[in-house]
Image 1 (cartoon, rainbow, N blue to C red):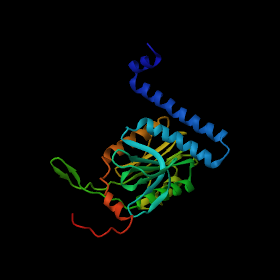
Image 2 (cartoon, one colour; image 1 turned 60 degrees about the vertical axis):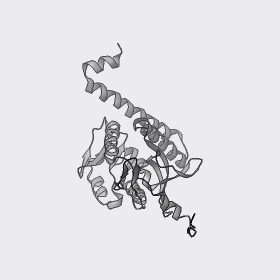
Image 3 (cartoon, one colour; image 1 turned 120 degrees about the vertical axis):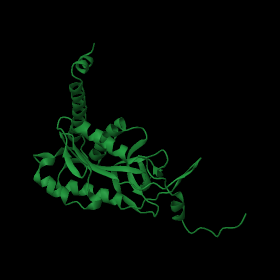
Image 4 (cartoon, one colour; image 1 turned 135 degrees about the vertical axis):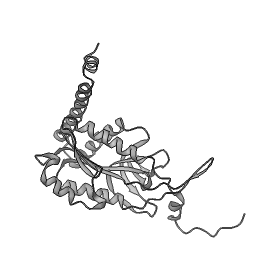
Length: 257
């Protein structure tokens, strides 16, 4: 019998806590290694984005695609470059892909995250503005045809937004008065639903309240709460491809056939 099996039998909760703590420490070690070994700031950001994307792909169901990219709507308006986009890739393809550059239709987006070296006032505001650049885009929704008729157009859900980093600058983490003051200064479209500092701090918003998660289980708490948020959203709306086609130019006069 392995050590893990023994722990699982004797104290299942402790087994889970210790296993997820090691997962958190593993990610923290990767982020510390990159900060000590990557000399270019832009490349460091890319490496850390890849680490977070790797973790999300590992834990999110396959129905959710996770990539970096830019969000686009049917009018041709685009968001800022987004570090991490969680989106539907089953019913909604990405557009104009070039190497690792892609446009994600706004209707396909479930959530967006910014990956930063630390969480402070400046990066908090920055992440809020990135979220706003996505949430302000137009989203279409059309009825879904099925064998028995059609389902009505799905009501648009709020896009989840957050910030993730290796550490946080406030000594008391997300309990710090400075964090709360800066957080509450974010406007409607800038509100962040969750945040994670892998060094051991996590917050989450639900039932209109900001909750602080456990330090040693920050990563697991962040992932499980994110899974619950995504679960509550259901499926993305059916995109109106005619709206995108119309944006390409004036349609010719129809001729009878």
